[in-house]
Image (cartoon, rainbow over the protein chains, first blue to last red):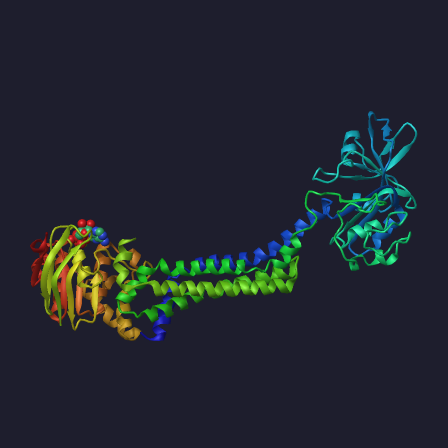
Length: 390
Length: 201
Ligand SMILES: Nc1ncnc2c1ncn2[C@@H]1O[C@H](COP(=O)(O)OP(=O)(O)O)[C@@H](O)[C@H]1O
Ligand SMILES: [Mg+2]
C-alpha cells in the first residue's frame, strides 16, 4: 500500500466521521486546558487562602504587657516593609454604660491612630469611635450616628466586623476609641504579610522601659535601638509566639487568631506546585484518550489487516488521523491558556507558561503513545474474538 | 497447494470434544461444504483451519497457502464508509492505484449484485447486502484459502443460490473454499461435503 493511499484512507476516515475528530478534539483540548488551569487555580487558591489567613488575624501578632507599651513606638512599626497595620491597644477598666442599653455595659478599647487599618477598610472620614457591627445592629446605629452615655456623646466614625472565626474574642461587642498615640498602652498589634521574621523581637521594641528582647541579645540598654526596628529580618532566631522568658520580662506575645497555625503553608505549596504529578496525570489521561480513540475501532483495523493491509500502514494511518484531532486541540488550547496567563493569572506568568508548555507536551506525547499502543495491540487473528466480544 | 488436517480434535473444556480424529486434505479447485447441526463446531473448525485457534489435539498443515480470508457469519464494516471503499481496501493493500482498485472492486460488486449500491454507506445496508459485501471483500483479497461461515443465513433463496454459485466459481480459479452452511442449495453446489457428525464424539 502506497503512502498516498494510506493518507487518502486517513482523509476518508476523517471526512466520513469515522475518526470522530471533533469529539476527540473537544475532549483532548478540554484535558489540556484543564491541566493548564489546574495550575492557574492552584495559584489562585493559594492566594485566596493567604488572604483568608491574613484577614482572620492569623498574621497579626500581639505583644501584651499591661501599662508598658509605648503607643508611639508601636505606631513606628507601620513604617516597616510588609506591615499592614501597627496599633497600640488599651482595654479600659470601666465599661461604658450607654443610655440606650443601660443593662449591658460595653467594653471600651483605647487605640492609637492607625487602628483603622486593622478595624476598618479605609481611613474614616470623620473623627469618632468605631463600634462592632453586633453593637451597631443591636442599637440600630450607623456611621455618623451618635453614641450617648450619661456623661457625653460620641460620633461613630466606623463600624467593624469581628467574626467568630477563631480570633481573640472581646471585640465582637465593643467600642474602639482612638486616642493620642503618645500614651501608654497594654498591647501592640502588628499585622504583616508576609509575617515579619523575628516578629517577637520587633514587638518587644515597643516596651517602654526597653528591656532586652531575649537573653542572647546584646541590646540591654534602656532604649530601643532603631536598627532593631528597621531591620528585623536581619536578626536571627525563632519567630514570635513565645512568652517573654526573662524574669523582668512580663510581656506575652501571641497571634490574634491562633486557630490557623503559626505559619501559612501555602507559600511552600506555591513553590512546590510544579510537582511531576500534574504532568503525569495529564500524560495518563492522554494515553487513555489516544488508546480509546483507536481501540474502539479495533474491528475495523483488524479487518483491514485481514484484508491485507500491513500493520505498519495501519499505524501510519492512525497517526495521521490522530494528528487531525491532536493538532487542533493544541491550537485551541494555546490562545485560551495564554489569554489567562496574561490577563487572569495571579502568579508569575513565566512560570505558568512554562508549566502550560510542559502540560501540552505531556498531553501530546501521551495521546500519540496511546494511539501507537492501541494500534500495535490490534491483531488480525483476534478479529473473530473482537467480533464475538461486541 | 493444500491444507492437511491431521487427527484434529477440539474441546473448550478439555472434557467434551466437539470432534475428534478429524483427518482431511483440502485441495485447490474444490469447494467444501462444512455441515452439521448448530453447535456442532463448524465455526470452531473454521478458526482451526485458519490457524486462529490452536486445536486441542492434532495438526493443521499448510502447503503453499499464503493468503487466507475468512468471511464471518455476521458482517462487520465501517459504518460511514461506502460499499465501494470496503471492497477497494484489499485491492489497495495489494498495491493497486486507487483507479485500478475501483475498477476491479466494481467487478466484484457486480458479481454479488451490489454495483447499484456502490456509493451507499455500510450503515445503510440490509443484513443480506452487508453479508454479500463481506463476501465480495473476502474474494477481492484474493485468498488461496477462503473460509466462509454461513454465507446464506441472511439471504432469500434466490440470492442464496446465486451467492453459492459465485463462491463455488471461485474454486474454479484455483482456491480452496470451505463453506460452513446449513443450506441445502449451498451444500449441493459444493464439490465435497464435510459432515461433522462423522467425527462427533
Ligand atoms: N470460545 C469458546 N469457549 C467456549 N465454548 C465455545 C467457544 N466457542 C464456541 N463454543 C462452543 O462450542 C460449540 C460449537 O460452537 P460453534 O463452532 O460456533 O458451532 P457451529 O458453528 O457449528 O454452530 C458451541 O456449543 C459453542 O457454545
Ligand atoms: Mg457457527
